[in-house]
Length: 113
Image (cartoon, rainbow, N blue to C red):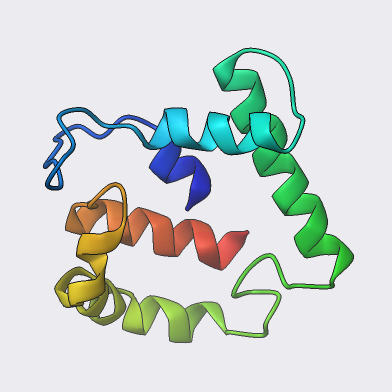
């Protein structure tokens, strides 16, 4: 999700007080605060890599497959999961509001890690 939110949306629906999509710059700013140097893009990628490292360090599974979810069960529920995510009001608080097809892609990526 971090990498998804850091990429530019195809359609931007600004929240009150924002006239531009700022998530990529905010992630770069967080990296800078943590002492990560380089260009904005470099800082973001290093930040995301550090988050990946931390998740591995605390033995957090990297995918639904690693959690033991069977592929056929996942595939059978994929559209239902995507629709539920799309209709969840909390989606409006995400920096980038995904289209239904993007939610499906994100869920598929989450299955495979």
